[in-house]
Amino acid sequence: MGTAPRSVEDALADAGVRFLLDENIPTAFAAALRLVEYNVVSNKEVNLVGKPDPEVITFCADKRVVWMTRDQDARKKVAYAGLVRDKAVSAVFLAHAQAKHSTMKEQFEVIVKHMRGLEDRYDRAKGPRYFVCRARGLPIEVKHFADRPGH
Image (tube, helix red, strand yellow):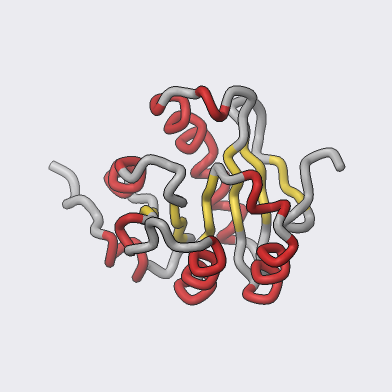
């Protein structure tokens, strides 16, 4: 009848690509994605709720996980960009036209739409990579953490 749901510990221990969903992404998404065998944990599941972004970035570096967030403002902070660069942290920014007004279902669909491709791209990566994912189109890779697509 299938395998048992993966735990947070399983997701963090796996040698494959792993993702941390920031606190601005519903916690339930992590458990749902683990059900279909993605290595995903939520900010809440690893006790990072309310922690400053530099602590989240450090966690991602220490655990070698990709930071997935809707926080577009994080890219504008020079200190964060430097920390992400120095710690070689990869990141995915979820940004679509109505990001602030999208339903939970729409947010989940954006993540699901891009997960396999992101997993493949990060699996082949030699260093940190940064992507912006929107509801439409493929993930857009940007060269630096603070870069915006098309600029």
